[in-house]
Each structure stands twice: as structure tokens, then as C-alpha cells.
Length: 461
Image 1: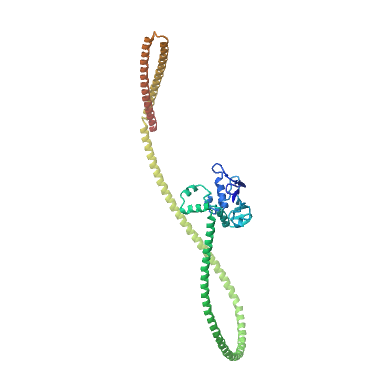
Image 2: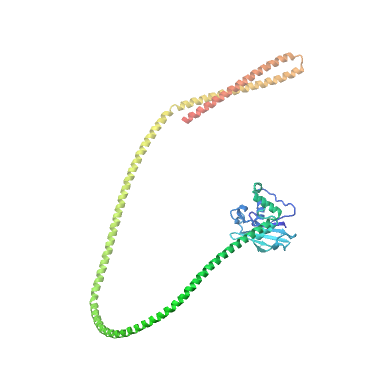
């Protein structure tokens, strides 16, 4: 199998559809930092089954979706398509029927990702086994990411063994072996679970047998109980029939007593009607008294409420009086503090005024000294300029003398004496120049000291 094309849509910085052909031989991607070269490698690892967000340089798998920019909105999904050339028919059985295999991984924000191979949805494990059989995959050392060279150098023996297995083309076998081991472990766990279930069923069977024996005994006892209940019901019916006859006799007597009681009740009703006729005026008087009592109770409550408000207002006024007294005392203390502070500031002002006397004279003297130093410096500079001018004239005379020496051999002796004289004068002038420079440096130091003294005097003033 050979990789032929990688297509990205909405993956990290590739918001627009981007297709990268992978031709036979060497295919390179060159660009500055931040142009997306690492994103291409991560897209290749992602479509091959990488499920770790840290390997994608993110905190979650949704970080591979384009998050938006100042001029582009965020995308809701990302898709990476990898096209494989299977013309040599080296793919596993589920994928070997096609000459071209197109693997697509699509992720939707907050909904997870799905894999498709030639339009059919497949498992991530199938994709990982496909690339494991091809001695590659999302965790293959052939995909060199940032910092992986150091990891390979410092790799443990287990990691080195994985690299050698992938180079030998048997990593897919180890993937299948791992899956078979997982299935065997799951089968063993299921067998242990079946044994536990059989034990539980045996326990339940013993319990059901015991319950069956109890149910048979219950049926025998229930049959005896029904017979006993029938006998008890017959005895109860006989007793109830005799009681019914006695009750009928008692009912006859009660009817006669009820007739007598009804006559007495009618007499009592007439008496009650007469009492109610006499009770109406009394009820009116009671209602009037109740209304008066309620009105007095309401007035009393209003008076109590007014008394409470008056007491509260008196307490508030007393608290206000106390607060005003405290404010008066605080203001008096502040006035006293302000007076003391004012007196202290006046005393400090007088002391400063006394201390400032004579500063102007010292400042004027310092300024005069600075002016004298500046004048001396100007004189020294003028003298230095004059010496330099004389030195230049003497140098010109020397050069003219040399030319005359070359032109006239007869005047060589005289010119030699003149040259020696000129050199002596030049040495004297150089000595004067050095002395002038030394004096100039001294004057600059004196000027700096005078300026510092003037600044100190101004600061003290």
C-alpha cells in the first residue's frame, strides 16, 4: 500500500479544503514557522487512529476543529481523508477488494468522530489494524514529530522492540494477538461468571425444593384449617340465629320506647321554640356589647402603638443628642490639634527663615566664583588656540625649510641650525600645550566643583 493523497477540511489551521498529493519518491513541505507543517503530520496520525488529545497538542479532541479567527467563524466539524493505493493487494481481508482505499475520519464538535472506509463506517480498531499490517500507524516511529528523535535515543528496550517489530512487519500480528488475548480473557471471565451463576442456580434449586416441601405442608394445614373454619362458622351461625331472635324481641320493645320518646321530644321541641323566641332580644344585646368591646379593643391597640412610637422617638432623640455631644467633643479635639499643628508649623517657618538668611550671599559668591572660573577657562582656551596656531606655523616653516634644504646645499648648515631651533621651539610649545591641557582639566574640575556648590546652595535655599 502507498499513500497517494491527503485532504484536509476544517482541521486546525486548514479551514478551507486543502489537498496534498503524495507522489512516489520524496515529497517535501517547506515553509516558515507557524504555516501548518506540523498540522499535516498530526492530520496523518489522526486519520490513522490517534485518540490522544495530547498527541494533537490540545486539551481535548475537539481542539483539532478550526476555532475561528478575526475574519473567519469557527467550524462545527473537521474532516481528514487519506487515499491509499492498494493495487498490490496487500491490505487485510476487509479492505483487500479495492484497488484504492479512501479512509475518512470526521469529527463533529461535542459529538465525537467516526471512521469510514470507501463510504462504509468502520471501527477505529479496524483502521489501526490496517496500518499495523502495513508496518505503520499513528504511533509508528516512522512518523517523526517534534522531540521524537530524543525519545528514540533515550527509548527503553520495550520501545526499541516495538520499532524492530514494526520494521519486520509483524506489528499487525501483535495487534491481533493482543485482541485474541483480550477475547480469551473476556471468555475466561464469562466462564467464571457462568460457574458463579450455576452455583447460584444450585442454591436457588435447593431453596425451591425446601419451599416446595413447605408448600405441600401448607396445603395440608390449609385443608384442615378450612374444615375447622367451616365448623366454627356453623357454630357462629347457630349462635347468631339465636341472637337474631333475641334482637327482634328487643327491637319490638325499643319501638314502643321510641314512640314514647318521640312524644316527649315533641314536647321538648315546643319548649325550645318558646325559649328561642325569648332568646332573640338577648342575642341582639350581646352583639351590641361585642361590637362595643371590639371597638374599645381597637382603640386601646392604637393608643398602645402611639405610645410605643413616642417611646421609640424619645430614644432616637436621646441617641441623637449623645451623638451630637460626641461630635462636639471630637470637633473640639480636632480644633485643639489643628491649633497645635499651626503653632508648630509657624515655629518651623520662622526657623527655616532664620536658617535661610545668608544663603543668598553664599549663592552669589558661588556664582561669582563660577563666573571667574569660566573666564579663566576661556582665557586658557584662547591661549591653547594661540599655541596651536603657532605650532601649525612652525610646522609649515619646518616643511619649507626642508624644501629649501633640498634645493640649496650651500645653506644646509644654516638651515640645520634653524631646524634645531624650530624643533626646540616645537618641544617648548608641546610642553606649553601639555601644561595648558593639565590646567584646563584642573579648571574643568574647579568649574564642576563650583557648579556642584551652586546646586547645593540652591538646594539648601
